[in-house]
Every structure is written in C-alpha cells, then in structure tokens.
Amino acid sequence: MLQKIVIRVKHKCKKCQSKTLKIAAMSTGVNSVALEGEKKDEVVIIGEQVDAAGITSLLRKKVGHASLVLVDEIK
Image 1 (cartoon, rainbow, N blue to C red):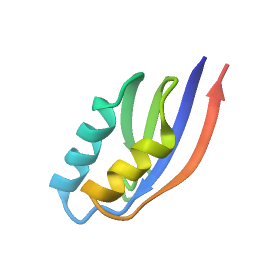
Image 2 (cartoon, helix red, strand yellow):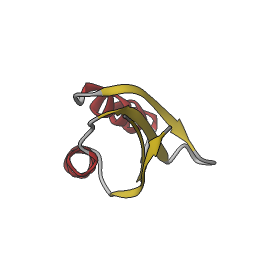
Image 3 (cartoon, rainbow, N blue to C red):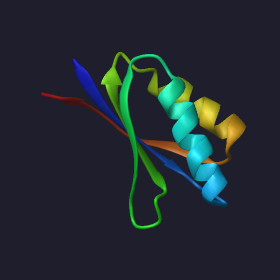
C-alpha cells in the first residue's frame, strides 16, 4: 500500500533544499520525493511502509525546523 507523506521544512538556502531531498530519498521504502508549495517548503514523499516520524525527526536534526503535515494512503 502506497503512502503520501507531506513534511513542512524551513529551508535557509538552496543547499538545505537539496540536503532535505537527499535525506528523504535515502530512507527505506521511498519511491519518489519532491518539493512543493509556493516557497518549496513542503517535501512530498511517496513510498511503501515509510517511517514518517523517523524522517521528520532526522530532518529536524540535520536541516532545521520540520513538522509532519499529512500521512495518507494512495489508492
């Protein structure tokens, strides 16, 4: 079952955006990662059996403020 996870991350620069994408893509079960929103402040992760809380926690440690917005299953 595929999941759609949206995490809002405050980026300080373009390097932080690429670091966020790299961290999210390295997690197990992730199929695709994209930046969305007006300011490219939302990370959309699609995958199977992805640990949303774990990715959010890791982004807080490595990048900065991150908050979990949505976890939904794709039918």
